[in-house]
Amino acid sequence: MTHFEMNLQAAHLIRDSVEAFEGIHDKPIIFEHALADLAMMTDEHLAMIIERAAAAGPMSYNLSTVDIDEEGREHWVQGLLSEDGKVDGHAVLDLIKAGKLWLQVENLYYLAPHLYGLLKRAYDELAERLPNFSYRNLYCNLLISGPEARVTPHIDVAEVILFHIRGHKRMTLWDPERYPVPDELSEAIILRETLEDIEIPEEWKSGGDSYELAPGQGVSFPYLWPHSVDNLGDLNVSLQTEYHHPATIRRYGALYANGLLRRRLGVEPKDTGPGVLGESLRAAAGLAAKKLHIDGGNRRQVLAAFVVDKDAPDFIRRLPPEHAPVLRK
Ligand SMILES: [Fe+2]
Image (cartoon, rainbow, N blue to C red):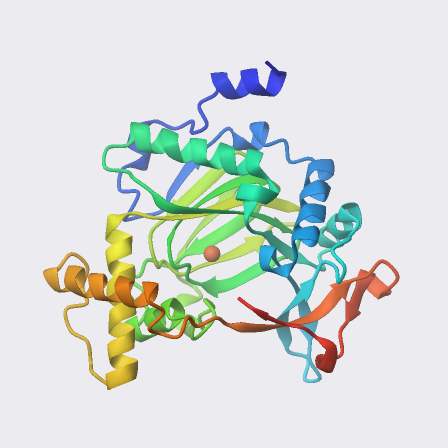
């Protein structure tokens, strides 16, 4: 047995007691975990995963940088790690450290099965220890971002647990009870008509609850809670996970069905509140519609505006719009 396997066998991946997770589906929870030690996310390791992601192609990652347009406004644009599947992982990491790129590596179950396995174990530990905790559709990704990176306010269509591994970041969360998100917007995001980004009203800016995360800390937050992230001056590495449980599957299905009703028939949906019978019934319809692709299986089109290139200024080569591939995500 290797040293790593012995450590893993001995370790509790979640260090807090059960009580710390009380209300996990209703409020944000900050907790301590062992993944920062066990995942061994050295530069070498990160470079290897970046190279695998490049080889797997752009459906396996999201790579972004900030562009400034003629009027001086900032825009996030997406790009490619490589056009031929080859990339120098260390060069990409250096670029991320210089604050030029933000990278999310998806499909960890085959790009980094050891990380996926660790995360699944952490979830199994939660499911074993917490009464009424169960998870479905576990989705795991690796976030690598630079000292100045920011993720603007958005909502994720799942419950989220983020295991922070390297660096420091501030996460701001807005409780939808106090800062409601209109159902129409949640529906549009679920139906993939729009990106998850949301324009927050002016009065939200001084509100919300902020949490600073250091390596070894994690945050869990509930379904459809708007949030934003600011890195605090160093390279950030996090394992981000999303999951569903019966209540969120119901809510997802109901919003999906309501979204179709509103769009296809112009009907104003009723009984959208969580926990009501109407929600369960609509959820069944929405989930069926989704499975049958009645909505046309919407995918968003994203233009790949640049490619990482070691010979280009800042290692970023802009792709002329007529040659920029369109990714369907
Ligand atoms: Fe998010």
